[in-house]
Length: 115
Image 1 (cartoon, rainbow, N blue to C red):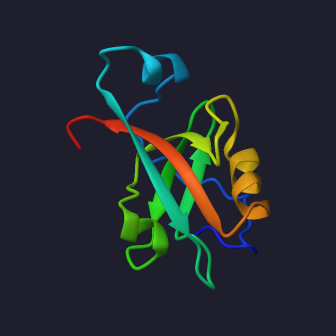
Image 2: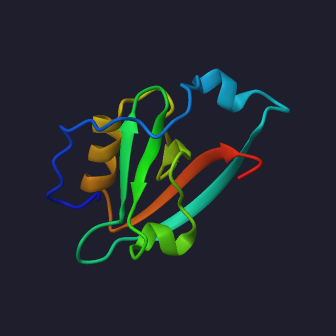
């Protein structure tokens, strides 16, 4: 899970059924809806793992962590972190933005509308 000491080097098998482009996520009338979460990290971290690139996605969520408590789910695509558009960034850069920011993270994600 994402913690201040998390290694961001491992890259487990993706949970995604297929790769999605940033353009596809933003297409009007597409199958994705935007959600915004405010996640307040605890002593362990925020409780989720980000992987992938252009766009990044939520690879894992700790069911007892802060992210799960506000509704973050596996397979959501990360659109922005604290107001910064991250659709064209890789997971290492996005993870670094979260880890070096404040304890409270405002994250916009896109998820399939049938989730």
